[in-house]
Length: 344
Image 1 (tube, rainbow, N blue to C red):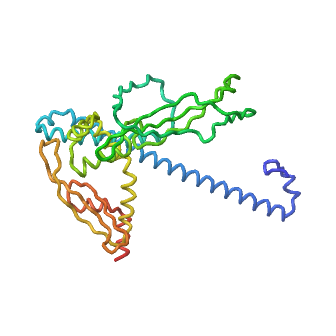
Image 2: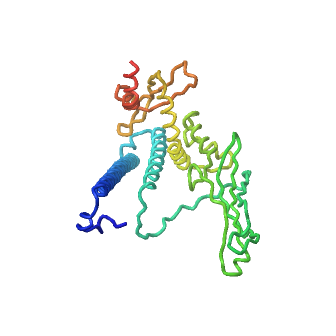
Image 3: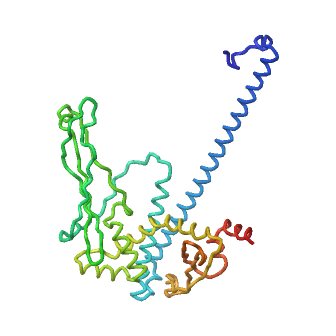
């Protein structure tokens, strides 16, 4: 059957009225389908543009916050504090800096991949080996099938080595090290034929990639700092009694990275608490260091709790600089306010 572009005027004159009507209907349907496809593409492009604009604004905001933290860290005003205030201020700065760097890395990882300019690999600081006297808990990761998958081979593979990664963990009154041993398997038959075939299990995901802290040790740092109110220099001393050297800078950065990893859990808890029909809110004053003034000022912890008659309880907290109405209004969001107006 000829296409529309192949038809000549003589061909159209020879068509019957019924054929012309059918042809016109097909043309209209084709035009409508093209219009719908074009609209869908425009909607997709607009949504991607909004996502890119939001991501760029977020990256700019985090970059600005990092620059401001560094100005505070090396500014002359910090010298007006006492030694204890300066130490607490430095620990808080390290936490916030690690948190912002983790958020910035996550946003930059979501950006479209581009061809970067070749540059020298950054020099990684030499890490101190974990103490040999710590108990090792070995986790062996081996492929389920060690048979060569090369076509026309199918012979058993030979273990040729392993990669070992160690992460520091803790249980009450005891440090121990997780040893993740990833075996390497290859086929000797294929090697003799000049074919390299290596099989190895992928690395297990961790809360903090590239660090020595396992999930249990990161949780212990957070609980000691924010529940037991132990500063990092005291945690460093406590850990040293077990023969483990953990500098306060390492503890602060681990806490910051763990806080960034827990943010999705906070968002889920917030959605759960705010989904109830009755919500209780209250604020509690706390003292906050003021880096610019060299003293403390009053801040507030806002608590939002589900109703006491709800089958499942829940509480979510937010740190605010004041107790004005703008803080709960911003936290609750427009959807919650609209739901409250509909309930009234």
